[in-house]
Length: 110
Length: 116
Image (tube, rainbow over all chains, first blue to last red; front, side):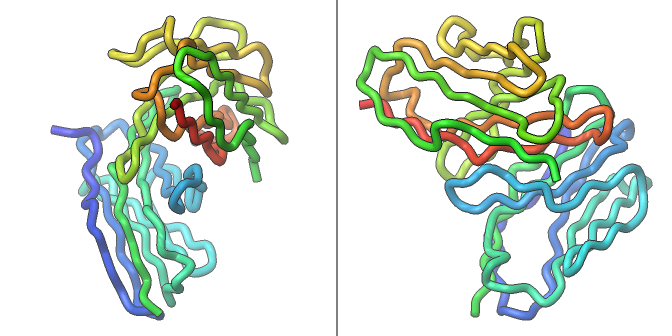
């Protein structure tokens, strides 16, 4: 079993839709959770960083962590064509070991 | 926010030559830097982890003599692809850890390497 599972998609939504991206994990020691956005031919960009459980909101983006279910989500409200990218989840128990999902490809259609 | 730069952004070289890629943390000190490789439409593949002033730790299957990593200061790490061959053509991305401030990584923009 992989440490982190992420549906690769592709996911295609109309502009203005709410997007839900998810990852599951198996290691209950993970405490630090991240979402990255990667445009084609670019390095990943940190979108959200969350410690432990709970929600975090930043503009149109909301990150949720449910440690009891080992499940994290990223919600994008009022999606825009510029949100079209690959979204990577990542997590860590601390230290220098990070575990990445394989990424979900999202296309927002104008 | 924390900014990581990479240079060059793309490079084309002849087979057999060596190529050096620089990774810099511009506004923070990075005790740990990571080097990744990414093929088209695939996820990140960790190559090695380097801590300032010590030898890099390479992932299984990554040739340390082929991919030389030096982390000489808290803001600079370099990856040298020695005797490059066409199969080394890829997208190389570095990242820097912002610990202990945050348990996360900030990525550079990547370097596209094409070996002819």
